[in-house]
Amino acid sequence: MAKEGGYQKVASKNDLKEGGLLRVEPNGKPIVLARVNGKVYAMDAVCSHEGGPLEDGTLEGYELKCPWHYAIFDVRNAKVSDQTVWATDLQSYPVKVDEATGDIMVSLQTTKPADGGGREATVQQQAGQEEEQDSDTLQKKYYEEEERRAADNKLSLELLSKEKLEGTDIMTFKFSRERIDYIAGQYAYFKLDGVQNDSKGPIRHFSIASSPTEQDYVMISTRIRRTPYKQRLALLQEGTKITAWGPEGEFVLQEDRPAVFLSGGIGVTPFRSMIKYATDKQLPVKITMFDSNKTQQDILYKDEFDSWANQNKNLKVIYTVTEEEQHDASWSGERGRIDKSMLERHLTRDEIGEAVFYICGPPGMLKAMQELLQKEMQIPKDRLKVEVFTGY
Ligand code: FES
Image (cartoon, rainbow, N blue to C red):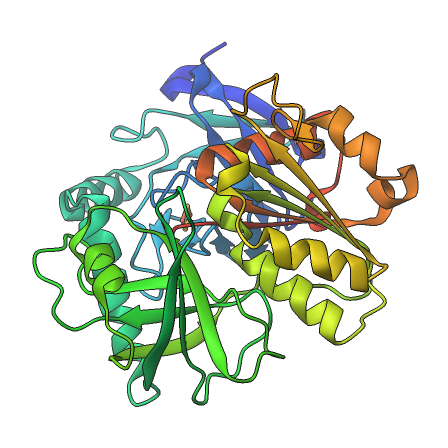
């Protein structure tokens, strides 16, 4: 029940250990609690970038890092770090802890908090500073910032070849490798000349689909949408030079545990890199990939995966199609979305109990997979790695 100043009990101090995060929903509003140096803080739980669940992020000191694209927020005031400008400030909320009962209470009345005028001034100032910016503008700003940070570390790559996956809008591009030194699963930035009027500007980042063991090229695959950037990319002539830099990203293979890859559509690109790398290096790590696509036609790199699965006894690839005609007798793979029973059909209990689960796909798929793993299957979040695939 709400008390004076709008405070209401949302949790007990026992629920939140030091350095921990906890999602609560007073009046249905998603809020994340963080406990640092014995003090409890409350802020919005939904990341301002693309809606990442901040309670699944990592907390280091006062810095809360979003699990999806690593925007950093200060839990004391919910402000986003200057280092991660692709997200915007969130709202923080006053917290009281009843030391006698251990009750944690949060007030949603952020403009007139009960705990002093200083706080009110801060909130109002923050609101005044907030700029209305759409996500494309923010993304553009983020890319510009990344380009500035890359400074002289940019490379000129030559387009060696391009290929379209028949019946789809997916294209694969191979560029000269130059000096890009990356770990399988990382991404890089690609800037094109001659992109006009694209709301996100002339830069995008793509997962590198090739493996570091493929010495001669860097490969990306993407859907060719009707944006000026994508149209320009599709029309690039072989021999054209583009600017690239990177790599970045922490979505990389942990070699000391079995790996389960959950891929949605074009989100398969970093998995190709990791699978090819593990196969070429004959790594002893067991990899099981569930590759979900709408139709058989949409399955990218299928011939390669099938041939690597023949060479690599530690690799198993399960395809599932979500919109395929039920009566197509030629299809011997799975049907429907990845769910608990599908995972249990192909993984042993030990694998489920030990594996690191890697998820890459569109945001809706990530959310569904995170819920499946964490809520239905009680997989702890330190065994989940998530990458939002933004190359759409
Ligand atoms: S940084 Fe949080 S959703 Fe992208």
